[in-house]
Figure 1 (cartoon, each protein chain N blue to C red):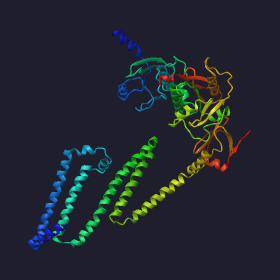
Figure 2 (figure 1 turned 180 degrees about the horizontal axis):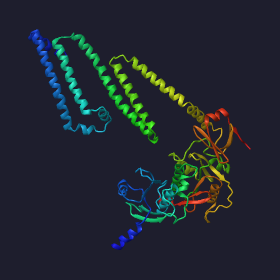
Figure 3 (figure 1 turned 30 degrees about the horizontal axis):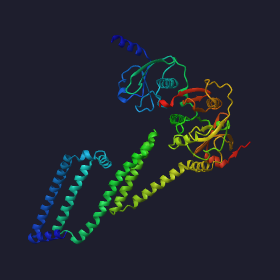
Figure 4 (figure 1 turned 120 degrees about the vertical axis):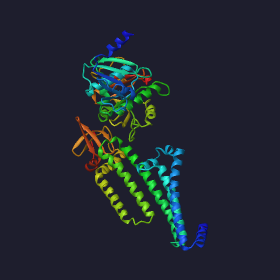
Length: 269
Length: 264
C-alpha cells in the first residue's frame, strides 16, 4: 500500500498548477485550500472560476482534451512554458479518475486552441461547423459515407480565390450555421461537389465552390486526397480555417495556415 | 337587503331614539371585536392549513412580500375589512344617520369600481414584477451598472400606470397625473428617437441591402473613399477589406455615398 501512496505522492509532488477538467461544484470547492494554482477547463464557466479555459467541443479523447486545456492556458499566460502541470480529469464515465502529469513543453503545440480562439471567424461559428461536420460524418448521406469541405472565415478573399461550379444555392439567402434547419440543408447539399464557404459571422455564403489556391509548398500528410490538399492550400493563401470531412476514412480534420491542426473521429462524439 | 331594512325598522320601533343610538354603538363595538377575531382566526386557520407554504414563490406572494406583508395577511385583512364595512353600514342603517336609499344606491354603484381598482393594482404589481424579470433577463449579458436601472424603470412605469387606472376607477381627478404620464412617454420616445436615429437609419438601409443584395460577400466595391472586398454584410454595417485593412462602414453611409461595383 505504501508503495502505491509513494507513487501517487511522486506524481503530484512539486507541480506548478493543477488543471481540473469540467469539475462539479463540490469537487471544485475541495481544492479551495490547495496552494498550487487551480485552472478550470470546461465547456462553460458555471463555477465562475478564474482562471478558466473554455473547451469549444466536448473532446472525448484524453489527449485532445489535455492538449487544448494546456495550450489554452499557455496562450492566456496562465502557465509558463516548462511548468509542471497536473491534470485531473475523467476517462470513460463517472467521476474524476485520471491523473496526468505533463510538462508544458513536453509536446509541440498543435495550434488547436489558436484555431478556435484566434481565427478570423467567431469561435462559436468554428464550433458549429465542427458539429455539422461531425454529425455528417456520423450519419453520412443515406447511410453512405460522404465527404465535405467547409471553409470558414475570410469569405471575401476565399470567394476571390475560387470559382463557382454551378449556380450558388445560397445566393440571396440568409442562412447561418447554427440555425436548426442548417444541418439538414447542408446534409442535402453535401452531395454536391465543391466547397462550402462560410463568413466570419457564420453566414453560409456559397456552396459548389471550386477552390483554386496555389498548392505550392503545402505540407499535409501523404495519403490524403485532393479535398484535403485544397483545404490546406486555401488556408495558406487566406486567413480562413478549413474543416474537412474525409469520405474515405470518415475523420474530421481542420487546417489552418496550410497545416493540419486537429484530427477527430466523429464516431467518438 | 330588504331583510336588513326590516330589522332596522323593528329596532327603531322597539327602542327609544336614545336607546337606538346606544344600541348602534353596541353593534359597532361588537363589529369591531368580531372583525378582529375573524382577522386573527383566519390567519391561524390558513397557517394551519399550510397556505403560506402552498403559495410560496408565486408572483402574487412575492409581490406581497415586497410590500412587507403576505398573501395570508392580505386575505385576512380583506376578510376583516368586509366585516367592518358590513358593521358600519348596519350601524348607519340603524341610526339612520344618512338617507338609506341614496346611501345604498351609491354604495352598490361604488363597490364594483372599488373592486376593479383593487384588481388593477394587484395586476399592475404582478405585471410590473414580471416585466422587470423579463427585461433583466434580456440584459443579463450586459454587465454594466447602468443596465440595472432599466428593469426598475420598467417596473415602476407599470406600477404608475396601474395606480393611474385604479385612481381613475375610484373617480379621483387624474388629469395632472395623466399629463405627467404623457410628458414621460413623450420624453421616452423623443430621447430614444434622438439617440437611436443613426442606428435606425443604418438598420433601414441594412434591410434593403440584405433583401436585394446589390453586392455580396466577395465582390470588390468602392464606397466613398474606401474600396475593398466585401467580407460581411449585416443589418447595421458592411465590412470591406483591402490589403489587411478592414473598414467597417455604417449602412447609412453606403446609401449616402452610393456603391461602385468593380467589374473586370
